Length: 316
Ligand code: MN
Image (cartoon, rainbow, N blue to C red):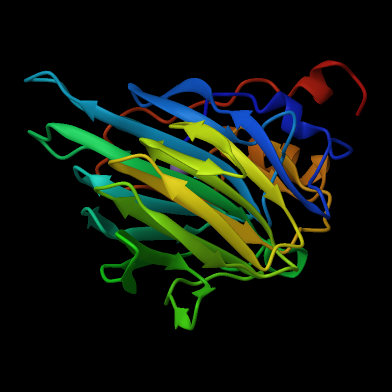
């Protein structure tokens, strides 16, 4: 996916970051639009820029399309120094990128695009698609990987666990002895939790990770506080377990990681480790530089970036 959102608040590298102690903070996602689909954007926010290296979290849908609608259509756009991570819950999308990959993603699957030095892609509902429910997250690459060669990976099968009336899918990293195959470059985890009836459980966590949990449907309770869909519960660091209970039915996404000690700048669809890197990426995209390649059969015209505010304001 892509953002036309300027991510202005996230462009300040001195902005707030996480808590080193356990906490429960409520962060309401803000509404946005991606390719014609309403999304709830939980990260970045003014009060929390990242959770580990997870630096962007969009919850798309659940949406049902009118007959004859094009569904979601995100035209050609670039990325740098991040991984786009797409978790499909309902409906399908077709990804096409400048490396030549064309990959349909179905419910229960993950698409992972590692942008590194530069890549461009499109995401589109297939003809006749009637629905979409997905989460797309971005993972900031660490400094020494930020300019790596781009690549694309598809994960059709992920580890599944079932307990306490919860169906768990390990999306990335390790959890309670299971390991997901999903490629990543910093200490990180992601877990989908789905339930059809009220459940109570305890999850094993790592004390060196910070965590957040986002209900996607239904609600859940942590420390006697209730979180509804699209209310991110930021949990801080220092927990070795998390007790929670759920309303029924529902689904939530647990993400965690080692707090990332880097000055990450996010602007439009770019991540950079300095403002200069981001400005260079935008110049290269606008110039049609080979850095971002060409996408076969683009569904839409190339997307254009808004002007960079810190260039516009003359600070650099
Ligand atoms: Mn994208």
